Length: 442
Image 1 (cartoon, rainbow, N blue to C red):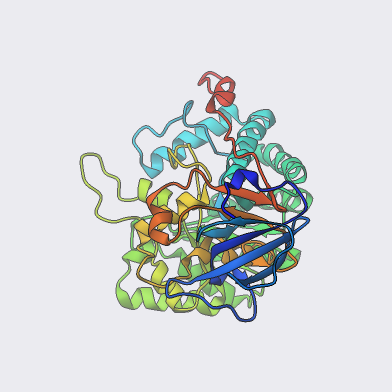
Image 2: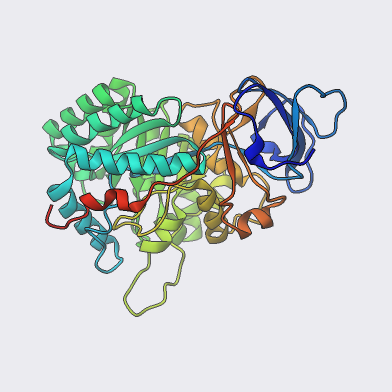
């Protein structure tokens, strides 16, 4: 039986036949896949739960309605491990004047001081969540600018939204501040209180090559150990090969025998090291158990930008080499419509499509889709997310694309998103909803 996705029932039992699912995203002891890594499956759904995942065409599955997906790719809902919901959508009132990293820092700093009240932050964060939800995202980690009075504004907002979005998007928060602020005891105490009261057991900062870097990292690691926190850093977002704070983080993790999870974001300058230096740093990262997330769209937007000059590199880290060394690697959205990235919509299908092009993930294995699914889910402590498993919720993204070239050639705007087996309303929020916040005189 062939039918449109719109006919999928809101409840009860039914089957999705002739689905193509990346085998690396299916929890099953044995599953056959083709040379492109896809498994041809019939998916049985009973009252919002995946009842079975069986080879397509297997006889004996006659109960309930059947919907023929005609070889369309099916993904689980996806996981965005590095975003900035609190910065999102400020571009209309505070654009980046020149597209540079320093232009972004300055513009965001001014906007934060001028406009970031609780209602402002809440409205923009919720707008971003609504976008991500419509695109098929199941979990998000967002960095929260945590400087001075903003700590007491944004963290309670995060806690409120986490509770309100429970069951739709699993939301985590990690503090964001420059590594030099670690030397301020009062600041670190305020951060620790905020994470305990409103956070998800995460600590982190932006690291760069300051003389006190190792001392600051010792404080961060000791604070994390004392409080049972995991760590999430912004690292070496620079095209300067002398930016090697990633190696210092690895050294600190080994020095403190840290057993929690560590995520390092960006790590752009790693790709510009001499081969011997790159290999040494990657080996330390692997030994320390550090995971790495690349932010391909944002980094290509910011890095190596000089007026009147064509950029010479793509701004991304050495992701292939990290993966080959056994480092868990991911890609994520990063910023959306703010001075750090003027575009984006928290759409992980777009992130995977553009990441594949920017990082040349094609022709190098069939499992890169894990970078927006199972790998970030495991890092976030959400092992049931980012995969399809029998007994788990029927949370999926259904597409008409039958292979990766079809999938990446178009935005998949007509995808269907299921939550507990029910197709959600995928209407995206209108940017006009934020117009009342966009006055530069606010």
